[in-house]
Amino acid sequence: MVMFSSGGRKDSISFVEETKEFVCNFANFALREAVSKTGMEFPRGVNEMIEAGLDPAPSRLVRPPRVAASPCALECKLLRIVDLRDLDGRTSQRYVVFGQVVGVHIDDRFIKDGRLDTAAMQPIARCGYNDYAVVDKVFPMVRPRLTRSSRESGNRRQGSETPNRLLIPDS
Image (cartoon, helix red, strand yellow):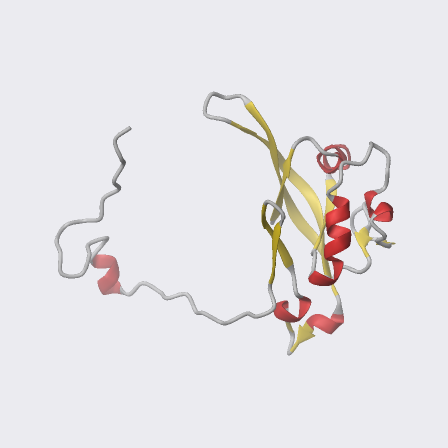
């Protein structure tokens, strides 16, 4: 499963609603300028991919094309579009699209020992404002498992019989 969000009702939301399909193209450092250009608000009918200088490549299982230069692309079928509402039930003009991955394209240059080499791919992430980050180093970390004794102790802190409590400040 994958999801993406949209601030405002952009063409990407309309196209997904109409076709029930989309492609999630991984953005990397090499594509950063083109990624920025695709965020412009083009008039309906203008091909953002072409305007950004990106070449399309055919998908195998969905109709929308993928970005040929993307190191990884996920072909997806729509599950649901959520129109996010505020606490009073009013639309926020923010949407979240959920899809199921039905096809995967990975550039063979980024496969090492049978696994995706994420750091070599250098994916970028928008951090807010005009700030982005690039992943160029990864590290392994195994998630710990609960032992029987830790399950039996519940949520008590070591050396204390007082359970953790959520504190809500006075308004």
